[in-house]
Length: 614
Image (cartoon, rainbow, N blue to C red; front, side, top):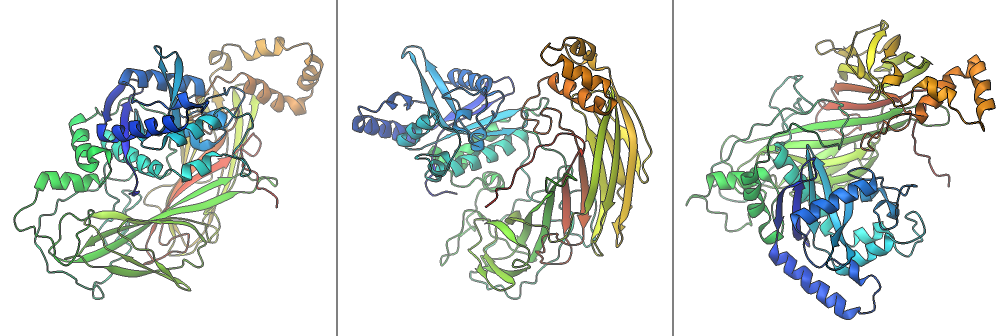
């Protein structure tokens, strides 16, 4: 938890932009008003003095301002970059993608006759709810952001006099605000679960984190305090989410009702007077449910950490699980390199008496090309050696994420190949998959399942035709799913080639758009009529002509669907591999890897990031 973090207010809005819960912290607000008064007295001639909104708005004012911002920015999160629709004073005018998560709203005070900027608001979308957290910052930070919203130059250049990145680095409370937002989001949607560490000697297929990586003996753990008996609240980890599901920030309807009593209880205990102390819902719930008895005497020679309110007594064990997710974008194009990265975490369950310090080595860090590391607050900064990283930590009770990291994949992609989709007519497309699975992967690495999905979010599928070389195929209204390897038929120690040619027929295009394809062709402008007539007469350009016409008349899509802009089409690959980590980090040979893959249509449009040439 950042040392300097206070929250002025928070709001929870539903998908109708109505405030369903709000909380203000008068103690923090008093500090804000005092800072505003001091700032105003020291800068009487400041031209942007009025932009510092000195009070917390009412729920109705906040809801109206947030709705107005969504309309102004084009979606809930907004563009994040300056586009032709951006207006001066908007978040997208700043031209920085972080403005999709740190937003500002203008509170319209009619009696004052001017718009007032309230910033920064940490925006977190979870289920059907938008969670807004307003941390305490200095008035000069708000004024600096107001200047960024009005400058004429575009972009976040390092040479600029002011830029958003340097401004945010000067505001540590931003991190705390997002931690509060994520904790509240888990509570209101009922997603408060601990990372799973299954105590089993054989892997199952129930979720991402379902393989025991092994236990480490406790002979080397130094006991530092007399055992103390205390109740320990049990928790049952819920199953992990579906592997490879494409996450979306678009609020969904039909979720559970907001439990306001649980939320009030959590906020009053986790962040009294607006200062976050302990955002662990399991800790807060255990303390409120069990309380403390007269036997719960903390050790006198050591300070009991907040993340371990109860001490454990019983059979001791220490378990670890490595869970890695492979993110890949495969283009099959010479001009665009494929993208491949690994994000992982080490989950731990420590049932240890007293308050021991635990040290264990991580191997493979020097060869796995770790790009980023973060640790649980209970961990100390590790010492780096040639091929070992001795991690010292004082574990809490229950399951927790000890370490998160990003790394490069030391092996090649476990699924590689290409996907091609060609529109042979306005309502029919021919596709081809050619994939190689587990090429270069040897035992004990095992692929438990592999699915390929072709989504068509803006076309309704009538039928499809085609037979894959392996696996089964099914279709829904807006997607075709190919199950290459099903659960129970794992692939280990060998590679296979899978092909799937076929065609897919869509509902007539004129039923899905206001202007039919025929009317578009007939209504072309005089300026380009010759060119387009030539294209229609040239059979080699028929497909390009069809795609261009349909792209122009695609119905609008919310920007929260990042892979549905324009005419981009792709296939989604989901898989699960067990046996070892792909980054090279290891504690024990057993681990779990899931896949998050995108196969871009070789023949269609695709977005990509260009690598700067030095």
